[in-house]
Length: 361
View (cartoon, rainbow, N blue to C red):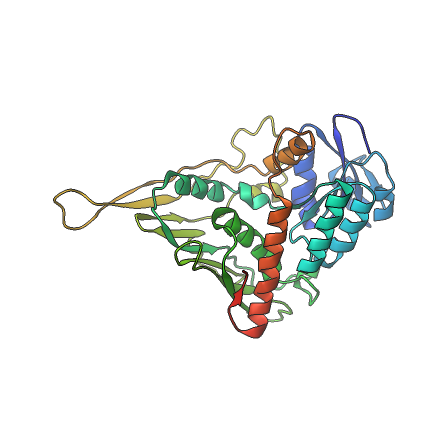
């Protein structure tokens, strides 16, 4: 492996995840170098990154002793064999979500990573969404009191089924393993592993081969005094409702609109970590409605105010990995968290197939 202070990174795959997210983010973080891309479409890579080295097979990446980190941004069912080969070649590995398509595969990768003394982590960039960061601040302030119900929606209006692997009947395809990976991870960061899950999956669009709608309820009966966290996503919502609605004993948090970073990256912007300026700024902050009991007043008095509006920053995800490998920071997405998300995803599938609530403890 490279002994340079700059970590050399190889990106396997050059589909939408690699092109929109990984390549520009890696290029924007000092201390990381996008050294090569493994792709069957070198012309597409060179159109975006002239002069960048392109190799035809993952084996060429794994055999390159100068590569420190391998980022896997390929179809979900290929994550396990590629990550396993990369770890066995002595590389640190970043896998685009989900980690794998089964819990057993994820557990095996984590075991191999530990044996090899290498990092295996999952690209959970939406921990750095502006709305998620704002909600974390609201919860930390205690403004809402004890949280009793959460509605986390990631809805879109995409009525035509696109021609891509995510929409084909393959292991790990469908909206639950796609957007569900993000929503589950966010819920577990905020409230931990639930006691149980119930999941409903459906194919709503004409021609859908895999689920394009899901509704999950995470139950926290013993750990959070009955908290219910509802995770929902649909591809057929023309009139979007709130991204977040969080109700507590002392108030509610409501947030409309998605984080802007994905759309900005799709538009071709390439952020730099040391020159972010307005990057990730949320122009539509959430609101808090707080209920206060006033002396001599029979009914609580409500006060509505703007929630915090921190900027999102996906580059910070890769900066954290850089700093962790240099011994300067704890890893943002830990092995325990990687496993927990896969546990919820796979037991959620079991709940949907069996039509029952499934225990996680």
